[in-house]
Amino acid sequence: MDLGAGAGAGPKPARGRLGAPSSGMRAPGTPWARFSAWLECVCVVTFDLELGQALELVYPSDFQLTDKEKSSICYLSFPDSHSGCLGDTQFSFRIRQCGGQRRPGHAGEKHGDSGAPASLQREPAHYFGYVYFRQVKDSSVKRGYFQKSLVLLSRLPFVRLFQALLGLVAPEFFDKLAPCLEAVCNEIDQWPAPAPGRTLSLPVMGVVLQVHIPSRADTPEPGPPEPSGHETLLPAPVVLPSVHELDLFRCFRPVLAHVQLLWELMLLGEPLLVLAPSPAVSSEMVLALTSCLQPLKFCCDYRPYFTIHDSEFKEFTTRTQAPPNVVLGVTNPFFIKTLQHWPHILRVGEPKTSGDLPKQVKLKKPSRLKTLDTKPGLYTAYTAHLHRDKALFRRLLKVPLGVGCSPWEGDPGLALWLSPGNSQGLQKKRPSDVQTAVLRRHLLELTQSFIIPLEHYMASLMPLQKGIVPWKTPPQIRPFRQDDFLHNLERSGPQLTCVLKGDWLGLYRRFFKSPHFDGWYRQRRREMAQKLEALHLEAICEANIELWMKDKSEVEVVDLILKLRERLVRAQGHQLPVKEATLKRARLYIDTAIGSLPKDLQAVLCPP
Image 1: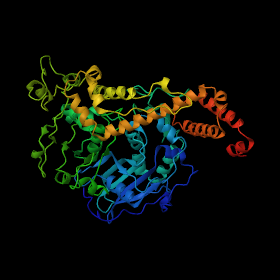
Image 2: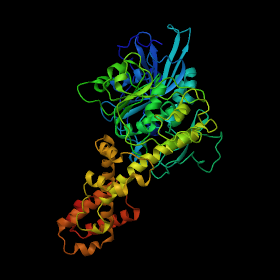
Image 3: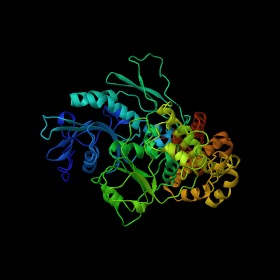
Image 4: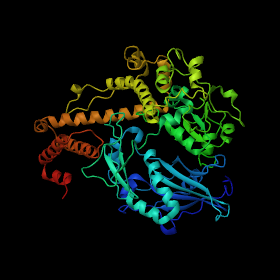
């Protein structure tokens, strides 16, 4: 496939409904509020013989994209010339939003995010692009091939849901084009909002997709959604087991031997280049890697599919500073030469469709990296802090008794079972979703074992509730002292919940320098500050306000009224975890305090 023609030209101007030019920012109050809860817009990218990739359609037509965003979407919606993708293929990308917020958030968006797990909240500064690309021979086209992509642009990381949606919509769209797309968008505009914790039925094109929107209150593995509502759905719904989780076992098949090492690299926010044979393999591997840390939010940048045409190409490839904390998925071998100074490069080969376990990529020193003919492997000088969990491989692979009694390196028995020639090593009787569940639980327990000591120490920094009194400023949250935390690891460390041995202390020391510690600490401290504020409000509402006001000046009473009002606003905006009874009491206290003031002050505080 030759997509190089016209690569230097800018993208073709976007057209909206029935080919009309884009008309700028979406006005508030338009009928697309429900649509916007799920998607920003739908794009169609085609191949123009003179211009190369061209943005043919944006729907709804009034959604505004900058020229830089249009260019990125055009280039990232097509596989590059090294992939040679024939037929239909799906993949995803992630781009930085340019030019700031361009539309007001829809009603309930902030509240919805407050109940969602940190790793599944809306992206405020990035767009996800979910792509369905078709390339087939077509003699009616001048260059002999039909090449077109349908792209869903969203701020939600619901890759499983949007892939399923594209699987229904794209084949029909390629046959019927614009009328089909308009009908689908109108159907999505009737969907209920993706409120965390709800199981929703989403009708589209005669099919009902049933999904559960994850919530912080969910158990780590909620399983498939239960039937929703009291009505019988006809036709029977297509139940999606998850809106966001990929088949982790399938994604990690070539790197099972190094899953823990890759988990450590992700935990520490290390720069990693993933070179894959296609955008589908690239994007799935990157998304699988970044999901390894759940429920911890992945705080570094990541690009499931990235090309040399991306606007951030120079930023990511510069040698004037250290490599950025980003996981980069690419298909062009040119990146091996450009980014050979990066500390970690993962090269994966073509995926196997048979039941055999593919050849495991080997650990190789970066010095063995060849710029022109790089063989599959994990090129890194990094040494894992934790020992390999051999029990994990016993659960995933059929390892005979007596085999694998030592780590995989230097263990000829387990190495034999991991070799590509062994067709009996894989647990063929176990479905892939069971093996994915085993792998996901292993990574979840590993992350939880690492985070629980941090959570316990953080909780110890919270002031005691008995020290929170109504009419005084609440005590401060004590600072996080890394040395104190490390000193307590011997009696409250991860060894209490995890059987893995290794240098946990060294892993924590490196973690403290990573973006993930900074992101986790800021989030936890913000939540603790909100809890402290809520407890102080409760203490005030349980006190006798009339007794307090007896010897207070008008200035002090007005100050209390203003502070209570401010906290009411924050609580009603779901920024404070306060019970409704406390809010009612606070409103009553405000009315009581205002009633104690002279009439002129009452008129100022409660204007007509």
